[in-house]
Image 1 (cartoon, rainbow, N blue to C red):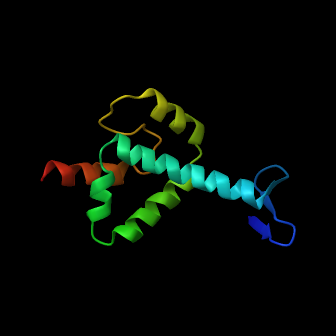
Image 2 (image 1 turned 135 degrees about the vertical axis):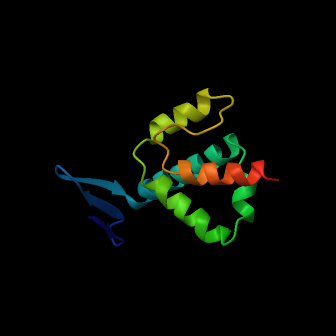
Length: 110
């Protein structure tokens, strides 16, 4: 459960053991960082342009961002993106693997 207390600008997350507090700004920064990882992944795999031309691309992009935001592999993803020069597919843990494969098939058919 996530509760945002705007008056105190604190975010309380209850999951598993205990409650951890972080500022609303810290939370928004982590969300933005995860969105940036998704953009880097799409560019690294050469499908960023295809994502912009699919039907209802705004909704497709929003769902992809949501999947990326809910992933627990941000550190591994950032390291993979930094260390990988060229790849044909994302790492196995990528929650957008299916979308990336579909976008790559669109590119292959052009």
